[in-house]
Image 1: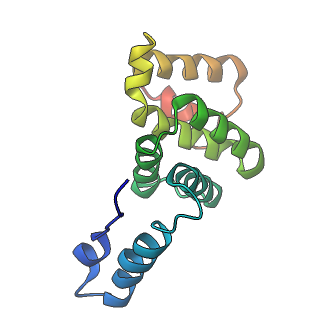
Image 2: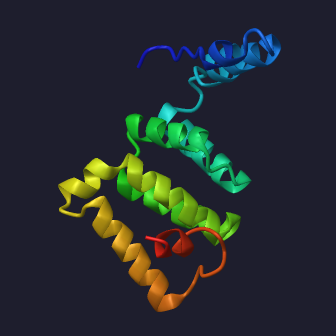
Image 3: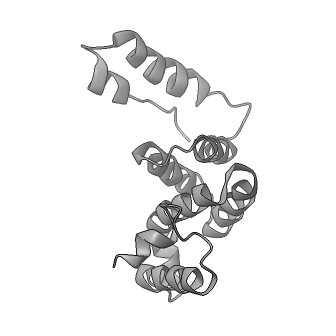
Length: 146
């Protein structure tokens, strides 16, 4: 795999926070992500775990889930990782990350004959039967409105 080159920091912040842009593009992605002591698949899993544990469930997490998939992480592997981390970082965080991961691994769901809508209904049915996340603001409640 070729060298990772990132320009997002400079693209978004060069005029406002050039030092932060430099650290993002040249140090974090330039040096850290190109360090070969850890392979990219493992580094991607570590990053997803760190973001999930921190409660970061925005577009940066989705970006890193997409990277993980591109670096060879399978649906089965990411599901096992998210499940394991949910026990330590919090069950609602697991639910939030699973919703994003299902979007990223949609093609694998479709290949298995399971649509994203079928998977959503399965989550809703589990929530309805168990009431596990009722009132927590994520997971089940996000399905009950639709």
